[in-house]
Structures are given as structure tokens and as C-alpha cells.
Length: 372
Image 1 (cartoon, helix red, strand yellow):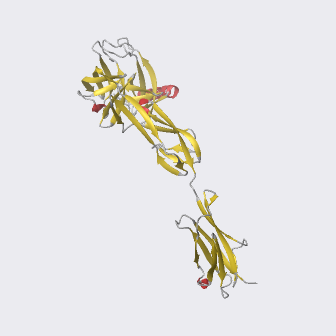
Image 2: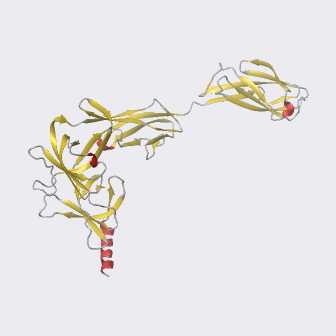
Image 3: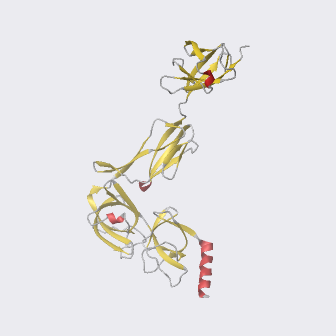
């Protein structure tokens, strides 16, 4: 009975005050409700969340609420199987390290959470220039050791000491007085034009300059957007589909550093080559024992090319016409044919034409009709 009452009360609170908070890395959403936690013996103001006991929130989790990162300081398992609670602190810094062409960026809280220097979330900087950073311990932050330089709050820091407990990492760093923070740049590289109904991964270079050395950040998270998805659209993998002819603006965003670069993409229809064969009298036929003239036209992107020399040939689906159709004249892009006196009436042969490159191909079925 007690469990049923607790479950009912929790469900009622969740129904009335539910908010969604998401995992920083996976984007998985969790339903929670909030309470402010202003403990009188603490200098930092926390938020407290309550959530169902089977929710995948742990101590040291990095979570996103309304676009802002938060760090989970605990995951208290209350003496029930209905709900758990956690204290959150809003991250006020980003820590980045750069190793072997890869940059690792994680949100952190800069300040002493429980120490004597805390003051309502203000960044703690001791007289020596040391600062404390608190973040999740994961495969990215595992790259930080006692010999690591990292960037935070616009400064370069060297690691002084590290403590790790229950998924939370405390990093104590000293400002390197003679080391400026690196600068970042995003370049967009586009082709002059892209062909309609094709796909491609567009190219952007995320660059990191530290002193005089500039390197490409290989693992930069790039987000692609199009001003007109009827011309260019992007899938979740960042692949562009060129779905309509025209021009539109695209934007690429380097998520870790909130840098953006824009460019104009031009999508053009394929240059279509068309070849046609036209009978002189408008009818695709030749009289038994008679003659008929036909003209080829080579169209390149809607423009006729009269300089192309046609290459003619015959096909005989009806073998009774084999050897009974001959060329008696050919001039420019015109051909004159003659049917034998004994050509089978009603039989059909194909007149084909191409050019020396094979890019153009035309075909016209022609029927043998009585002379009279």
C-alpha cells in the first residue's frame, strides 16, 4: 500500500511538472522534475532533479537542459524503488585537449563545489593562478593526466593534480603565463557546381592554431544546414543531396567552438545529349522498291551541333529484310535509303545513328510499305 501511494504521488508530480533533460553525448531524453536545492552550508546553488528509479542517470553524468550543460554530482538511491534524486550544477566552462589531430572538448564546472572558496558558482582562481575544474570522468577526459596542457576559460593550463571519484573528475590546473590559448578557424571548400540528382560529402576544414603551428582537427563535429532544402538537403551523416536546380546558401557549424562558415552551392541539371532521326516526309516508312530520306540531329544542352558527322547502321529484327536496305546517298547529317523491289511489305528495320565518341545514340524503326 505504501508503495502504491508513493508511486501515485510521484506520478502526479511528474505529470504536472515534467521536463526533459538529455544525455550530453547520446541525446537520450529523460523525464524529470526539478527542485531548487539551497542548502545553508553550501556556497554553490544546486538544482535537484527527481526521476524514475530505472532512469539511466548516474553520478558524473553530463546532461543538457534548454541547451545548457549540467553535471550530475550524485545519484541518490532513496529507500524506495519508485524514484531517485540527483543534484546538478550548471557547467560554466569548456575544457579542451588536443592529441594526435583530435580535439576533445567537455563541459566542466570551474569552481570549488564544497571548498571554502566557493561563491555562488563564480570561477575560482587562487592567487597562484590555479583553478579547479570538475567534470565527468570518461574516455575523453581520460586523456588528461599530470603532463597534459588543456584549454579552458580562454587560458592555457598545465595539470597540477587530478582526483577521480565515482565518475567525477577534479582537475587542478595552473595558468601557463607564457602560453596563449589557441585560435580556431573554419574553412568551407566548395566545387563550382554540383550535378542534379547526385550526392556528396562537402568539405570543411576545422583548423587549430597554437602559436605558429596550424593543424586540422580531424574529429570536429560539423553540422550542415541549407537555406533551401528543395535544392540541397543534408542527412544526419552530413551527406548533401542535390535535389533541385538552382542556388542556395549552406552553413557549416563547428559545434565544439560555435564557429560558422557560409557558402553558395549551385546545382545544375545534367548536360543531356540527345540524338534524333527525322523522316523527310514526316513518316517513318519506306516504299518497296522506293527511296526515303532521313536527317539526324545532335542536341547538346538544347543546342544543335551541326558539325558532328553521323555514323549510320541498320538492325534487322525481321531477318527477311537483311541485305534489302541500302544507302544510296549520304550528305552532312542526311542519309538517303533505298529498299529492294522484293523487300517484305510490313517488315520493320531499325535505322541507328551515333557519333565518333558514342555519346549520342538515336534509333528510328522504319516500316516497308507497298509502292502504290
